[in-house]
Length: 227
Image (cartoon, rainbow, N blue to C red; front, side, top):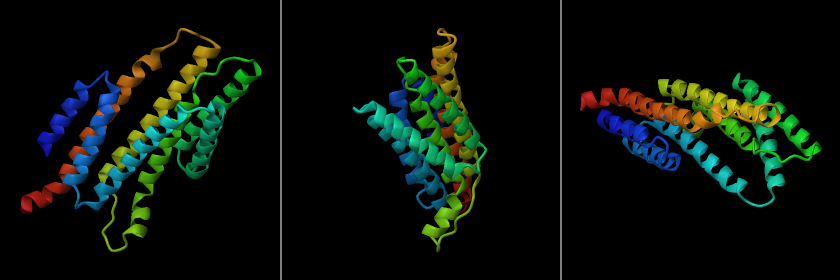
């Protein structure tokens, strides 16, 4: 399993600059890990959360490409507000709140001044999806104990690692939003975050791949030794 982990990490590094290929690779890695760790319900629960987050992101992207842009934008903002209400106990909710406040103020300003509006709502949507996924990780044990009362559900270190990474992804979305605002309202030439965003995001996901394999291997090691 460690060999497969190394190969997948190498593939993650090799696909730098090709986010579409990396996305497909990441889904394959999640499926592979689910098969290998099929008897560990805690790891499976975390993989389900990761898959849900990816599916939500992909679905939101498809929806954002449809007609009725203004209606879609309004719905995404309302959903983000609902997510904030659910996760307001979490410190990351402050990041989402800041993004919502500044983005909505900017949206109304652009409407009032008759300007073309950049699609910052997409990054607000991503931020809310990562924040909600973080909430699911935090509540995973509680939810799974209700769904599987006869199974041993417990918190594992992989929970904590993914929980922290979702916070990093949330901060990254906030930086993108702020750069969009600065670029469109103050300084039109600033592109630092925009240019580095795909690479930094892929670095984080490559690290996530390593964490998934390393922590899963530690959980499987006792059984492998007994075998």
